[in-house]
Amino acid sequence: MTTRTVTRRLALGGLAAAAAASFLPRAGVAASGYAFTGPAADRGLGLALPARCTPGTRARSAGPFYTPETPRRDSLREPDTVGEPLVFQGLLLSRDCRPLAGAVIDIWHADEHGHYDNRGFRYRGHQFTDAAGAFRIETIRPGHYTGRTPHIHVRVQGEGTPLLTTQVFFPDLEHENESDWIYRGDLVMSLDRAGGAWRGRFDFVLPTA
Image (cartoon, rainbow, N blue to C red):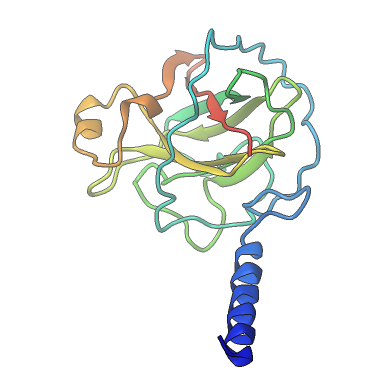
């Protein structure tokens, strides 16, 4: 093997390693770009831990409408919101059901008419879990659009866990769900009504890196 060939292979290997490194999260920063800032203030939700945790929440595609660097917020509702109010809450957990404090959850979804805001941050935002691993986001139930059942897009990551991108679905839309090829039954939130609003819960389980 010639010196030129060896040098070329080393150079190509170095370029490949540099490219791969550019996709890895920096220390203290989620792969989605948000700096880990520690646990949020206690939300006082008192959500009970599940009796057992799955090996990990199923991943689903981000779709074409993801926007990075969303605002940090507890409510995605807008002054002119007319959709049905929804409180979306839950826990971020490790495989052994330990709460992941200070983990980031980034959500986005369509408006009540099934349209995404691809210019601003309408129905888009992120927050961090509290010491109990809990999140709580006020939003609305998204509308459906051609080919898709209503759903919420989610990206979640804790310090020391891989980034998970997935989608969460509604249990009371059986017909729409069954016709959606991305839908999976293990990604359905629990849903009830409280105080005039829908209340949905979903717990995300993240494997350690």
